[in-house]
Image (cartoon, rainbow, N blue to C red; front, top):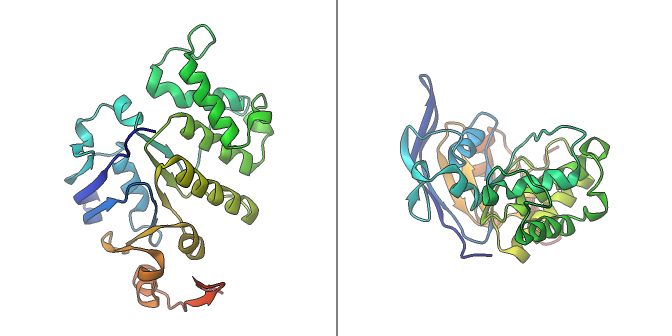
Length: 263
């Protein structure tokens, strides 16, 4: 892993037509940590992710990667440092796990078809390591249509890992998964961060999962403004939850950590 990348948002604003979505956002993603973006539906989290991954262009402010405005960075160079796992990931059901993970090497080798006569040893090694890390080596030859929801999500994570990013964006990585696979994915994300040093920014809706698996929380208001940023135990308060979600919730303690009963 190369030196960790620095990612900063400065004065970011964005609107669809005459409808403001994000207003003057400024923050830095802590290097080598897991940061979680939280906020109510419609507060602009997905728009922010699209801006930070070059799928949208800022209307005001700027987004910096290692001090360089990302709008000036070529997509291939950007993708060599930043990977994204979307909320819904699609691929042909007959595509094998092996081939899907190989696509993660595209930013490093261009559009040359991944075949033995073209593949470099570094590419093969990165793909193999990604399969091992996600526990998918034995399923490499299976098609995506044969996998469970949790296995499919791990396959897409393996593709992102094969990309060898310094920063990984995860837009609601536990969506559509039952609780077993949610915990499995979140534990794996933590291992990936701790062992590989990858800086992670993810969106989660489950407050308790965010409390347990995050090093930092970035809280966004319904109006698309940054409310606060900091360690989960310090920033998650009943007052903040009321401001974010418009509902009064208690915070108790479970096994020595904050817990939010939501029923």
